[in-house]
Length: 256
Image 1: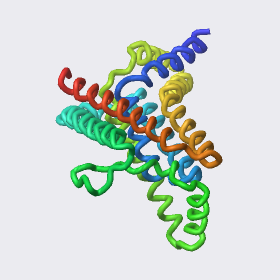
Image 2: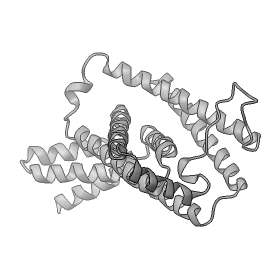
Image 3: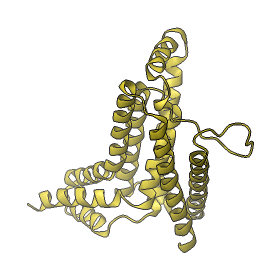
Image 4: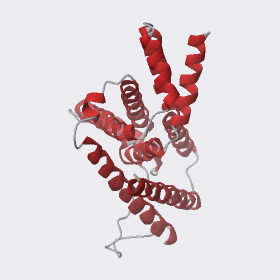
């Protein structure tokens, strides 16, 4: 009964910890990555899967204390702290750009040279069917297409590892750590490993939800392309999300 209760605790606290500012920032970084490289569902699916698995692996190892020796080294905390400020400023800039693009009706061009124009997400390009055909031609004709996929897969996994490692500065729930070490000290190493695994899976549920939403949106866009009005709503929504998250990270940097 105690073991089953520990599994429930792992799931509940994993979901709860998965909604901290660092974890939500991970979702935005994932969105930016997929928006740039996810030209089709055939790319969104594997890259998202690699990203999620890397995030789960890092959180699993963090709970088991496998990064403790690295995290306690001098200067590591300062680097993570500075990364918070940098990521917050980047999010704020992206939010401002989306807002300016929205106010101009998505018609910002090179006439405003100071404006960094963000392109439409790759998986929402028009027409989606041509992107699929283009990818198939690329895979048939390009000799190093497999190498390109491997590089992008490594890039997605590496990016997730860095972001998840940065998120380690957000403290895990006390009861999660206490329950894990209670199982380990009792000699039940298999239950402790399963506990850490369930925690890492539930921690990644918000990221998994974002990944699944992108796949469904891309599939819907393939049959019924979004109107410019819908894209305008998307821009202002992304502007609000990026701005609020960026301000939150800057505030977190100042207060910590």
